[in-house]
Length: 304
Image (cartoon, rainbow, N blue to C red; front, side, top):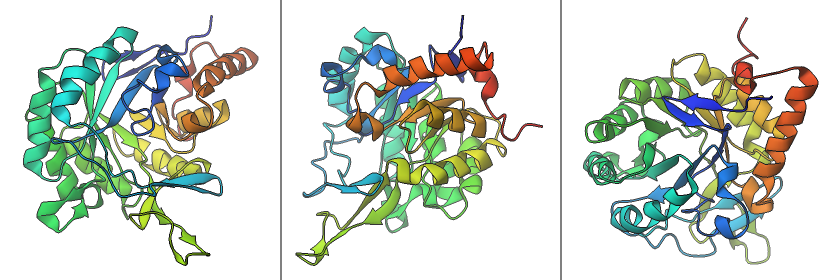
């Protein structure tokens, strides 16, 4: 019997697959196409204190081996998510991670307070790729001190497992990771999207309404694997690796680089049945390789 289960800071996952924040929304659309129970955990879309309409269209652009998006954190706000979205998602019995975004440290603290009163949330995931308006709009995740303070702000009001989601756009992701852990992170997730853009050669203008967007998909996997490999050796907390996962081989690479769990994002837009296929392929791989417990592969690429 192959054991695909894993554990993140006391959160038991039946398998290492996590629906990454962003494309999963709050699960309502995905439930019409696939089974939410295929995942070991789900991370809902970035939720802000107040409702957001997001960026002007066009907001999505396909690129070679990936896609750009500039959705702009469109969401109904924390109160609606807490009152309507999370209770609906609880019916599937899968650990729920709530991704939160704020523009100030005070907003992060308030988000921690709001979701502390909601039943069924396994962890909060702090998005440090959002702009810190107190520092001229620079993302919290670009500066170790800002990342530390963002994590600490949520830690003061949220007592459960805390995840900090790191940006690959930082010049020193290891320093940012250490700051996040120092600020109270129990888990790290990496990586978020890379900043990119595209230009329409007919209109001679940027394709996206917001000019730049986040690059995701297979094109970013080598960067994500490198980040996980480096960070996993520098901190003592579990990691959710993500970025370009489209097959069981990608999942295995992230595990071997040091991840404990693996997020699937853009891959779900291509194939909503992807997690089911990956789980079957992982079991076949373990059977062929004589692996009883998949979690034993975590970090094997750098552990002596």
